[in-house]
Length: 125
Length: 207
Image (cartoon, rainbow over all chains, first blue to last red; front, top):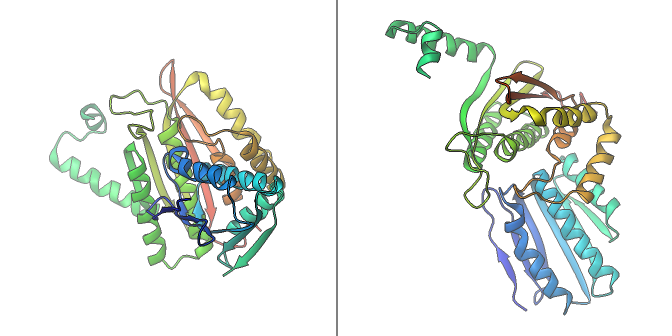
């Protein structure tokens, strides 16, 4: 299946979702005016990935900032990953990277890990 | 605008210049680094946030404080763009055309804190609901705010204007302070809604 590669901008993150290389990563800032339209390709890609996923998938989040609307969308993405994980389509791990001084970003990841039942690994850099 | 200028006695050129001098003094006195009245769009949001980030960098402000200021600015500006009841001709209420609403936006500071104030028009019929929401947020402590944020993040859907209904809760969480608000009556249908957010310059103050 085709990789989804989106370059970062001032207000949107870099997204790299590639089954062939096993790279699944979101990084940067997210504050688009229209989160639904921006993230629509991600949900479409995840739907496709679910039908032919790798046995294991490590989804890496290296977000430096996201607004509240993006926080909702990120939860939707994580819930989609939870479904893939629970349905046995792929064994999902979420790697949540945050600046070691950025307690808010660490806490955001911890809150997601409390809501979504997939293994989280926290990486302070 | 012309009426406004006349009202404060600026008929002559020299009076206008005096007004500008006063205005300048007021901004310096209150350490106002940004004061804007006009259209709030996504481009304005990006420009104001990056400008303020540069200012804070120059002041060698603590990284955590900088992030909090950035967070609050984005939520306030996007709130106006999405939710102001602006009926002027240039206003846009659709994501397709790009949201655009009129409002005011002020960033200032003193020795203790940064303050971010936003203002926009609102229909009187919506005031009670907004007031209840803000009062409810102000009644919650840190854990209460965390719980309601998690709950609403799960339950709320993204609106047609791209909002998640989480902005005010996030501002309260990031600042650790009460949301200060005021509704100034304009006419029988409309008021002007002001929101002031305060961010302590001492990183540990809210921990």
